[in-house]
Every structure is written in structure tokens, then in C-alpha cells.
View 1 (tube, rainbow, N blue to C red):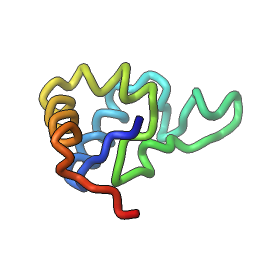
View 2: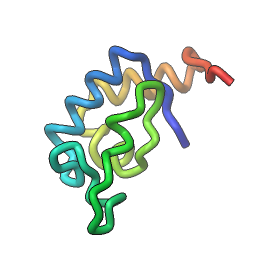
View 3: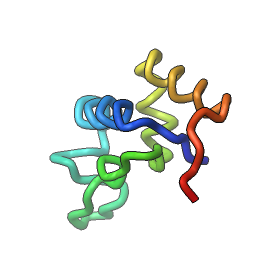
Amino acid sequence: MKLRITPAQAERVNDLIRSACCNCIKDRCLLLGGGRDSPCIQLLCVTGIYCRYFREAVLPAEKELYEEIRNQNERGELKCDR
């Protein structure tokens, strides 16, 4: 499941990733890397939340942002471009 986000929300998501995601070190993802140097995919995404770990473990801690994103997706306010 992917959650659509606005550009303004993407900035807030990126701030949250950098401050609260234990798998993101210097904009690199420990989960994706598997010992290699892999960028955090979520930091590159500006239209949606693709990282399951972030969506399930990090985002809910920021209650206001989480509710805002969840509610707009439930209402279908943001449509896919394709």
C-alpha cells in the first residue's frame, strides 16, 4: 500500500525520516543496503510513502502528519498521475 503525499508533506516526511528513522543514517538506508551503501528511497520520493518500515513504524509517531496523510488518502483527495 502506498500513501500519496503533497510536496509540503514530503518536506515534513523527510524531516521526520532524518530525525526519527533508526534505519536512515546520513541519508542512507540500512535495510535496503544490506551492508552496501544504498540511498534512502523514501527521501527521494515526493509523491508518496513507499517505505513500509517508515509508514508502519515511524510515521504514526507524528500523529498530526499521520492523520492528515491517512485522511486525505481515505477520502481520495490525491489522485495518481497515471
